[in-house]
Length: 178
Image (cartoon, rainbow, N blue to C red):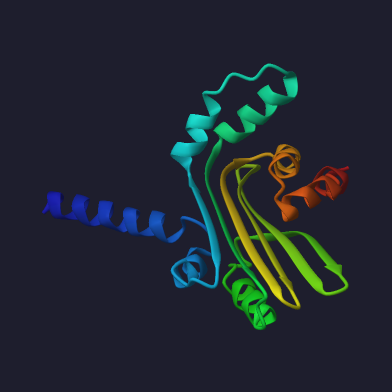
C-alpha cells in the first residue's frame, strides 16, 4: 500500500512539474512543427556548456554568470503573417495571469509587446515576451533564475529585439516598497 501511494505521488509531481515547465509551452507545442514559423529552442544543457567558457572582461564574466542560471530559452516567430494579431491574442490568453505579473507593455505604431514575469521567493523564474504587429509575431520564454539587467545585455549582444527593451525597466518594485 505504501509503495503504491509513493508511486502515485511521484507520478503526480512529475505531471505537475511538466505542466508548469513554462507559461506558454502549449503554444510552442501547437506551432513548433508549422513550417511558417521559425523556432529557436535552447536547452539548459547548452546554457551550462556556455557557462564553462572563460570570460576575459568583467562584462563577459557577468554575462556568463547570468547565462549559467538559465534552464531554457524558446523563441517562436512568424514574419509576413496575416494572422499575427490573432496569434498575439492566442499567446496572451495562454499566460496564466494568476501566476504572472505584467512587467512592461510597449505599443509602437503597428506593434504591441508585453513582458510578463513569474516570481518565486523574490527571484524571477520565468520571463515571457509576446509581440504582435501587422505582419509579424514573436513569443519568447526564458526560464531559470533570471536577472533582467543581465538579460538586457544578453539581448543586445545576440540581437534579440524584445530583450533589448528590458533596459528600459526601472526597478518599480523597489520604488513601491519605499
